[in-house]
Length: 190
Image (tube, rainbow, N blue to C red):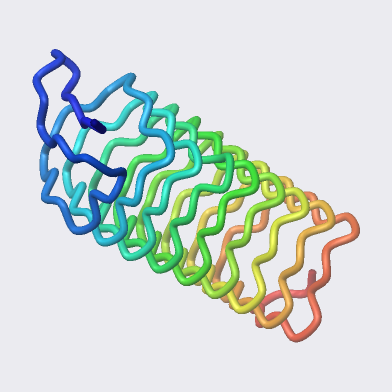
């Protein structure tokens, strides 16, 4: 039996398998929990408290995490957030090493101090996102929209920004050593 419990141990969902696709977990408090080997495709986590949650080998593709608090969360070990809605989410200090976030919507999200080493962020929407001091080393940002994003002090070493939109992005003190900027759109010389 697979269960999802809230922070106080109350069972929210109980299934015989690990398929929790499209469950409604709006405003739930799962702080500090481990969510492992689950199918949460299309699940609704809008406005949820997910601080410090460990999402290991979890499918969150098409999930709604709009305005969710994911401070210090770990989204790794093959976590899949393809096309997830993370608009205005708080991901400060989160760790998403090796995660697939392609086509995700992160408009207006706060990602300060997050670690996205070796992630797939192709075609991700980061319009107006706060990416100050973020580790984006080796990240695939092909076709990403970083319009008006704040990238001050971010590390983009060896990242792929082919065709990315960097127009009006703040690139102060950004490390672009070895980055591929082929076809990137920008309002200033990089």
